[in-house]
Amino acid sequence: MVTMTHRIALSFPGGAAIGHDAIIRSQGQASMQLFQQIDARTFVHRVDARGRISHVNAAWLDFGAENGWPVTAADVVGRPLMDSIADAQLRYLYGLLMARLRAGHGPFRFPYRCDAPDCRRFMEMQMLYDQAAREIEFRSQILRIERRPEQTLLDPLHATDARSLDLCSCCKRVSTRSGWVELEDAVMRLRLFDSDRLPQAHHRVCPACADGISHAGHARCSTGAH
Ligand SMILES: [Zn+2]
Image (tube, rainbow, N blue to C red):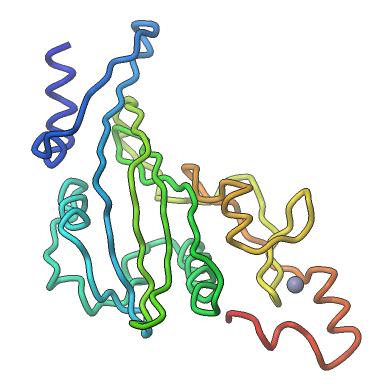
């Protein structure tokens, strides 16, 4: 067990230093030992009106370094946020959520995943709009961590899976069992980001927008985020 604990500590060099971490071993079957690490840090970054990173806190930089991305604030401040999101699908969905915030909706809170080769991290994101500064603040926390055998070939982050997501190209709402809902509601209800992978988005036109279009002129496309 000592060896195991050491392996975890080495995987989270920043975690051991902050004092309030605890490593808990479940009392389950020997072959299915689960480890949890409690980490109360909040990782904060802000994005300005032009979509550029305007601020990151120390915890955000530490988390990057712990995950193989050792950068300083000077390296990232001023860079477009979207440059740091590798996946096109995720960039698109985040872009829509940011546009909704700027249009006066929110704040939003949703679960998402940020996995490492040796663990699944269940995270929570809060997105808030600071009207005065015209900046969006992203506040992210770790809810829990599950250890897993190290994945030597980690799938590309948020590769798409077999699920599909119907997204209206006009109003950007998402089709769910209970009808078409705003994207931030879909992110919660369908736990869209709370998975290894994202569903494949299919663009179509929802019945309300189709009605609007067929009645000419007042299609909701004119107010769409893109
Ligand atoms: Zn629509």
